[in-house]
Image (cartoon, rainbow over all chains, first blue to last red; front, side, top):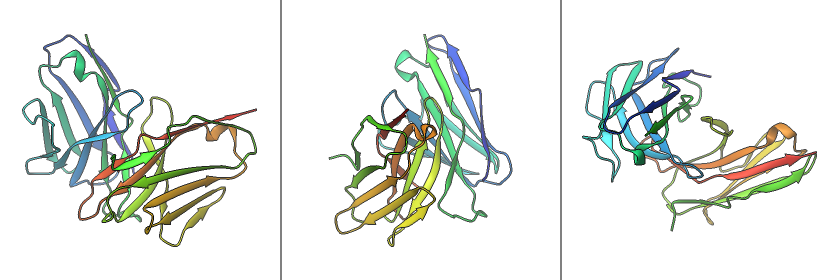
Length: 118
Length: 110
């Protein structure tokens, strides 16, 4: 299957700092990528849909000014958590669809980034 | 009511057992259905799509009942390596948004 990478895999930062997470599709082009957040023992929650060359679409309750998304190329989307606070500590996972793949609906997930805000 | 509901478990079963998980979804307009597997502190990985006619992949069988808005996953001859959290996932259609259940934890024991 298609491969999606994320960087960094783990980050610990101080409260008030900004953290950038990268999501890359390594062997396919992704016009659409998705950003999810998962708190311990909870389900993955879609935060936003990242669209190459246009603005991201945010889910209800997700602050677009706090979670900045940029999808500047067909293989890279970035999520920046601005002025991070301890309550932002979570597991952030991106996914991408391979439109040329066998299963049009399948989303491939990155390995996730574990953010801890002190 | 949650959009996708699952029994969180855990289901503790002996190796070789057959185990079944159920999932219900609230949106009757949902179009695509999946089972994902998630290992501890890892990303979800697609186990199988669920088709209206039901489908089987080795020891795994998935069923969909649209009338009851119900999806199931059956695992036969459980292996230790099947221990994971199984996520029921629904695509409401008209886009690519996936809605995840909280997952059902399976522990296969010797």
